[in-house]
Length: 481
View: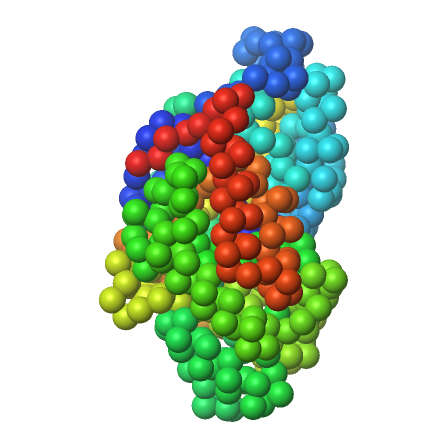
């Protein structure tokens, strides 16, 4: 999976801000005010100053904007999720050709925090990190130890164009903390409900636009010996992501802001309850495949993409690549926007949840800061970004890398269509990841989807998690507007 957090994934905030300001799905967010922690306390120890870093590099030039030395070694640690790590290795191979004798070590892990927090504390962090996944390091704990990546965007790409001019608008916001571009989110993530267009065509089914439509489709699925939805235990909160998006579309900013700001009773708002009730009806009618709370999430996803046991699955745009080896031939994976409760929703059906994800960071205390920046610069080249889009079937933040035919991917074509249809009606939220709620919420959602908890239980469980954070004075709260 990319991302258990790519079910909630990954926006960070600082000052007050308006997340409705978006271009092509790269969403606004503001920065996290750093909290006190052991990592933050170590921020100043052993840091290199600018002259120290420059003395270890080569001569700066247009082709070598960060002064990377020939023969240098770069240490990159990459989250091994739905996108794998080979796209970084691809860029590393390009960089090694451009810098004689250089070498890049690309290490894969699913335990970013567990593996790298000791390295931060010990003053020996990697040169480039993909700080992603459910076990990512909280930005609030390491902000003071990270490079400002503005100079990466100011540099020319390998084709000679300023990198900033090659990116979709708004992509800096999710990684900007207190005015510092501490993370560059590489992938443009689209959240949707996914289905097999060929299966739907064969049965004369249409993607539902409202939850009533979805419930009716569940009845048709049951007649065909199939389920409407299914889930896996580690990804139960994918349904929370779907529910939040649907509720925001139905109720607008009132819903989004109440959840973001941890308001008392935020999970009891009418649009949220309406979506929960619809989901509860789907569970009670037997339209949700049983057993998900005991099924590993990719195994559950294969029941959808390979066995076609269920018609629909909510996920981010990493799903096609994640399941590429477990998808039925001719499946024609396609996405559609989250359902609304009514046809009179505050936002149109075409509105959608999207944001830039996969936050890459460079520690200031790394042995080869210049090398980390050069590898990131190479990843932002047309060649490397096009390779990612083609091999991962998902767009990066670099414009002009996806052809109209989506490299033959129906999923990628549908992402482009959804973004076009949505226009400026694209939104996201950050409170789940900002406050580290996902692990606790998984327990509540697994019980609900299994039919062991009512809508009232789901609501009170989620509100309890929210209230605990809101009432904890040791946790810095971020006001969202």
